[in-house]
Length: 339
Image (cartoon, rainbow, N blue to C red; front, side):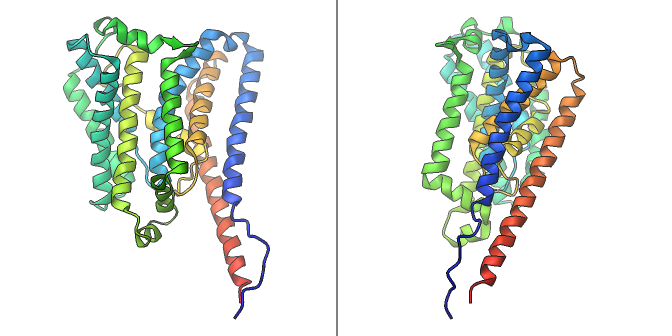
């Protein structure tokens, strides 16, 4: 039996579609900004752009961590609650110790989130419980812990050190520190996923967990590691949230998980795992933030933001499914030509 020489199959169909989706996000952003600016030129004011970038920075950090988990064919719905717990923890620390350096505050936030992430990862991998169930449960558990701790109180901006609040508004060469931190997180994560063995193993796990196990990939450690990254970045986002808004209560981050998941799937990270980039997730975060700002400027009811986000999620999942079916069909046809 000999293999017949055939033209290369469309193995890159998925990658092409995902890159096209990222380009589509850029085009959609351009059209959205243009239409909104024509309606209200103030949308392109320096303060408006700055607010969009600052809000995107927080969502993008969450989306990068979520993308790492989704690439492994899992999901983390607890990120909003982890952000809230981290923000309240760091706020309490700074309230009681005004001289705490910002770097230490970021490390504490990352540690709080990392613990939550490890808990999620252990339950998912070694408890053999679906990630959707685990993280939905920890979403409520972590939020409950924060409410119990806060006891109905909140931390106000005047109770936080001025240096920490300045960090939330300061810039370097005109670029806010929060945006620079988000870019650093994005670049480091992208490099690891693309150029290092660990990143390639995460993609392999998402493509086929069973095959990855047979290939000797430490699926357990990688799964826990992915959730650790998501939790730690949610903790960092909590610190950025505290610095950005100053006022922190137990409800901080409530409902953010929908926007985070939407940013990831709209940005081209397949919900079935194994494909996508953190660059796409960050673009998705920018698009969703811009939509929210545009609706406010156009004086459109914010209910439509939720409807648009839900619609984008359905469209993205539908697109992923169609591409997966086309790729599977192409592989079957290729196999049928081998004799």
